[in-house]
Image 1 (cartoon, rainbow, N blue to C red):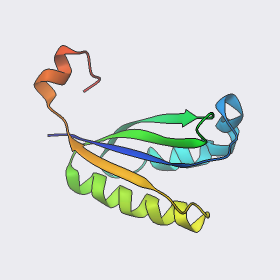
Image 2: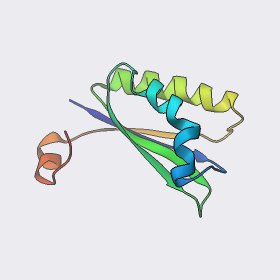
Image 3: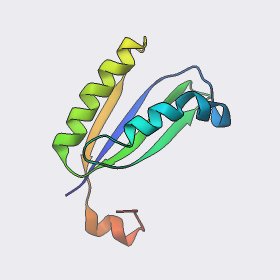
Image 4: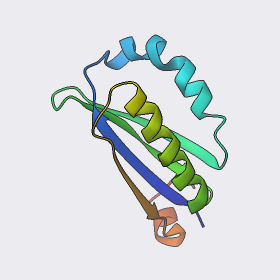
Length: 100
């Protein structure tokens, strides 16, 4: 059973293609996290928010990552980190072409 982790937080940029060189090392680090199957990076420049949607193989991995990532963001000065964990309904998600 897989789990989605949704995280967002205030962010001032860089945005779009400019974010790539700034965050490439972080992305490579995230790719090595235990239990991570994939991450979709999210950004909303108009709202001043960024974050991601992650698929983890198990709830424990999602919880551990959220805890670690919250501390990492807070140490970078981010004071408001929102994280939610959801169990994935595989059967219904597959009908709608989810990459699971």
